[in-house]
Image (cartoon, rainbow, N blue to C red; front, top):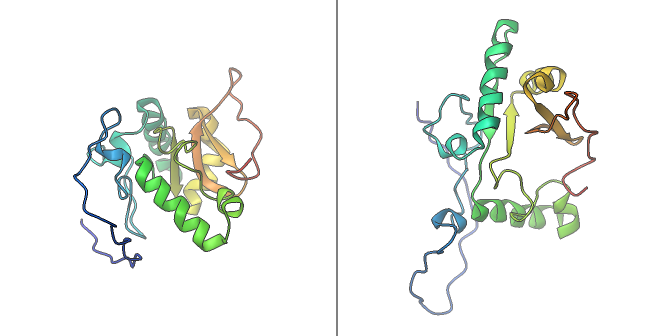
Length: 177
């Protein structure tokens, strides 16, 4: 089902002079895409909706782990949904720029949003999960599937991060460190 929502974004800056379009040679159009990986507010994806780039561009091992966890959570009545997965570098930059405006500084924004250069979402190595019951289930059970909560201030953010003994690393306080 397609859900139509509207989002109010600031108008793009006026270009100084027209310039010919330039296609990035080594990393493709997604590098400049400011919407790649965007989901409208309130929209989630089934972990099995692999036609969506948010999932199809994720690391296959991460996607498989989320799918396996989803199957395991179902008997407990927990519905795991994807709220974010892969993001283009341009979209991640837009998120970071929005956070700088919202929080007032680069340092404050970095606690909540990573730059494209360090974002695991851009690499396809991170997934955000919802609703909160699914987050709680994955925090308690995710390591069985290799999935770990990474940041103390983001209960929804998971990465494949278990060590050889199947343990998750200590939580980082936030995305800045």
